[in-house]
Image (cartoon, rainbow, N blue to C red; front, side):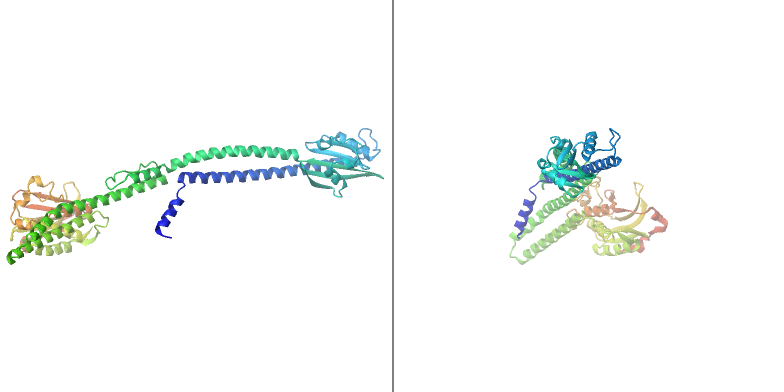
Length: 508
């Protein structure tokens, strides 16, 4: 099956709405339960009818046996003159229950009869004209049984009676047709009540399914309204149930998608903004490329410089884009003295300056050494850009309490450049902000950056839960730093911060 066919099959399977499926399953379950209950109740009632009929026949038989055993006529106090007399007297004295009948047969004819099923029978009626089921009972050799008739089951008992040569038979019958008819009427009424209950259940299930699926419909509606230009829609979350959890998870997914989209959009915008100028420069110079070797070499050097700057811009933008990812920093236990000495060795190659490591924080703490090194080298590169060869650049690290009263590990670098204008201090860590005041120093040919270095420094500081800062006085250099939260137990300056003699730490 092709992918398209599989997709079409899935569409065909999902034509019935979830609301209708939920309602259908509830209705099916309720119907099965009602049928099972009705069938069980009918079976129990049928069994009770059968037991009641048997008990009625057995009770009547026992009463007749006790009556016959007395052997005396209760009207005269003497003995019965015949079987027929005894049977007639017994039948006429009985108060019969519903469906019960008594029939006395002597010498092939009816001696007496009582009950609904034998009300039409008169004394002296020949047995041959009786209904077939009664004739079969009279002729049977069994003492009791159950016969099937057109009106239902007929429970009976056959009791032979004999006085000498005088013989007779008492037939006790218990019809269940009325009880069965009553059961059928009850079953029919239960069926109508069950049908009404099913309709009510269907309506309630439809409404309940609609309420349960309402958040799902809201998720669908929000998903349909979302576009690349609008990722701000969110699903309303009500309650703390599973559906609310689905809506919350969907909203979190939208938050992540919006963050990813914003990062990508910012990357595209920044790249387009910053790469447009060097691309224009490169294209323009290549179009006007001269055949003169000297001019050609100068043009190629310019093009190479612009391409290198484009490469740095793309690398910086990628770092900023990756900063949105959760694994941008990977903190580990770091020995601070080794870290600072490693940084001090790396900054030596950035420029011909007098590098002075004047302070080292001692101990260990949790941080990403590679990212901190990256941030420090950005600050060092920035210091080189705004100083001249032979100028002094001091740097260090120490534990202290910042202006907010928080215990921090501070990495700092202090150049001797022209400083930063007060108007630029609040924006200098923003993307593409180069700081006009700080740009007025010497070496303008070295200051061709895109204004992303300090933004990277701030991003790394924020990823560690810290901050980046700058303090400067116009004309007296600038002091940049990164503060990383540190445990309070590390804040004993005399024990963990080494003050190094300036001359001992000075490198040319």
